[in-house]
Every structure is written in C-alpha cells, then in structure tokens.
Amino acid sequence: MIAIQLFGITESKNLVAWRELVSEALEELEIDFNIQVVSDLEQFIRYDLIGIPALVIGEEVLFQRELPDLQELVAILREKIENTEPNQSVA
Image (cartoon, one colour):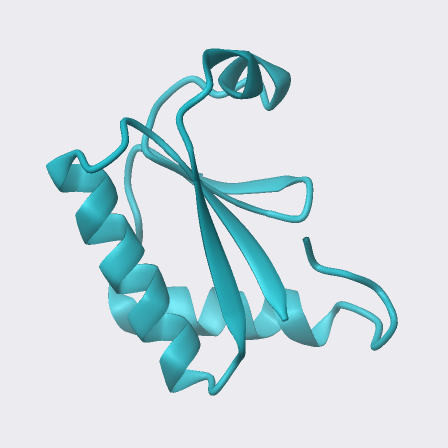
C-alpha cells in the first residue's frame, strides 16, 4: 500500500479537490493507497513547504500549490512508483 500525504487545511476546497484528483489518478493506476491529510504546522516546516496544498510521497515533495492535470499526474505517479524497489516503502 502506498501512503500519500496531502498537506493543507483540513476540508478546505482546494485540499478536497486535490484528494479527489490524486485518488482518481491512483485508481487509474490500480494501486492500493492511503491518503493522510496533514494540517500540522510543524510538519509543514519539516518539509520546508512554501505553499499548500502540497503532495508528498515518501519523503519527497512532489507538488506545492498546483497539481498537473489528471493524465500528467498519472504519468508522474507511475514513474515514481516504478522507480521504487519492490521491498522499499514509498511512504
């Protein structure tokens, strides 16, 4: 299972839209996933975020403030997942 973190203000319009788009992309890839919403300021600082919402997979910040369209997001997530070794956790 892939754990994904979405950083932002819980239930904000932007964060809800991001969650829906990321979920749709991962479902298209037929990947089992868990999306964790993070709204703790200390975590924002830990990842040195300059804008929210933000998408983090593992320890890598993939996007801040803006997401690409669905097809580009699918391609980026596919590449990220394919470059992860089988026993290596993406989260």
